[in-house]
Length: 34
Image (tube, rainbow, N blue to C red; front, side):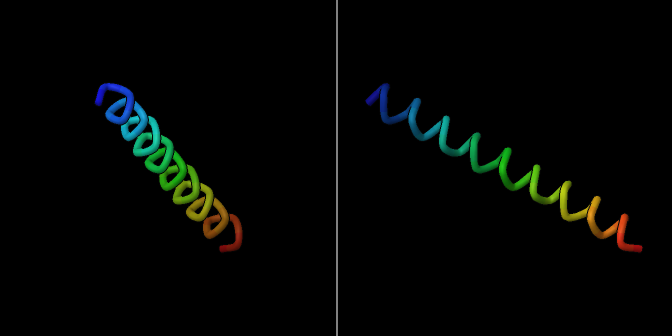
């Protein structure tokens, strides 16, 4: 139970960081193109 909870926490955090990083990269690319 503790392992599955920790695993879920790591995955959710990794997904959040990936979404944030790609969002920031997309904003930067849009700003550079304009």
